[in-house]
Image 1: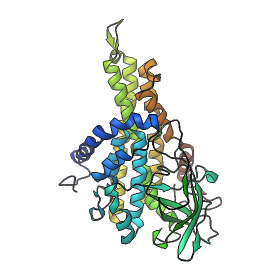
Image 2: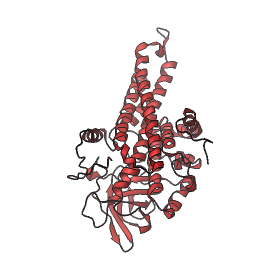
Image 3: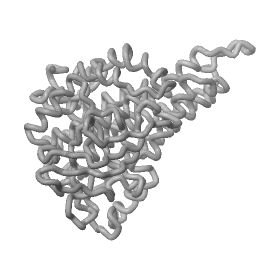
Image 4: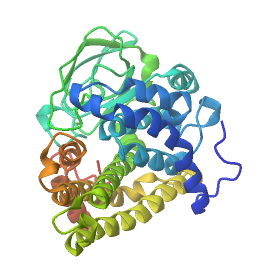
Length: 407
C-alpha cells in the first residue's frame, strides 16, 4: 500500500502526510485505550493489531514483504505520533518494528516469508537482549547457545524484554556456540510458542502495558533455519541494524511523550480559570514561560529527529554503514528521554495540585521516567559519547578495544 504518490523526504508536506495517515488509528483506538492499559497493565495487543492492518507494523519493510517501505523516516514519525498518546504502546511498537527490521536487513527470503508477511495479520516481534548479570551493558551476553545436531539450544535469563510473554517471535542475542570470545555474538529468531519460554509478570511505576519483564529460555530449541544471518554476525547486527532502528524509534517515541505532556499542559492552562481574579492560567506569564521552554526544545529535537532518520535512509540506500551515526543516535536518545522527563515535570507543575490526582498528568510523569534508565542508560550513553570524542576505546567487553559498536 502506497502512502503518497511522491516520496520526497525533505518535503514538509510529505512528512505531514505520513502524520495525517496514522492519526486516525491513534485517535480512535490507541488514545481511547491508554487509560485502561495503564490501570490494568494490559498489553496493547488491540492497538498493535489496528496498526498492523494498515501496514504500520511493517513501516520500514519493502512492499514485497507486506510493508509500507517508508524507511526510518516513516518509522520515526509513527513512533512519535503513538508516543503522544500512550508510551506503553509506543515502546512495544518501536521494539516490534526493530525486530522486524532486523529480519528485513539480515534474514533470508525464507525467513522473511515466514516472519515478515504475517506481520500484516498481527504477528508481533521484539528483541530479547539484556541480561541481569551485565545490567545496562546490553550488548554483553553471558548466555551462550549450544549445538544439538542441526539445531541450537538456548538457555538464557533475559531481563527487560519488552513484550515478554506476549511476542510471537524474539530476536535473541547470545554468545556464539563454542566460542571463547565474549564479543562473538549471534542472533536467533525464537518462536514465541516454543517450549521452555517463561515470562515473569511486569509490575512497574510507569509504561505498565509494555510487559518489559524478565524472561527465561530453558532448553529452547531453535532450528538452524532461524539463525539470523550467520554465526558471529551479532556485532554487525547490533551496529548496523539494532542500534539505528532501536534508538531512532524509541527516541522518537519519547519525543512524542514530551509533546503529549506539552499538549496536556496547554489544554489545561487554556481552560482552567482562577475565578478569584477572573483569569485563566494561560494569563500568567510564569506559566507561559515554562511551557515555552518545553516547546522550544521539542522544536529543536524534531528537526534533529527528521535529519537523523533521513540520513539513516540515505546511508542504507547507498549501502554504507549505519554505524557512522552510532554516536549521534546515542546523543539523541539522551536528549529525547530527558526532554520527556522535563516536559512531564513541567506539565505537572503548571497543573498544580490537580496534577497529583490520577489522570493524564501523573500517568505521563510516571511513564516519562522510564526513558532515562532504558538501555543505554543516560549515564552509560554519556560515558560512551565522552570516550568517543576523546578517541578512547569503549571497552565494551572488558579489555576489548573495538569501538565500532555503540550499543
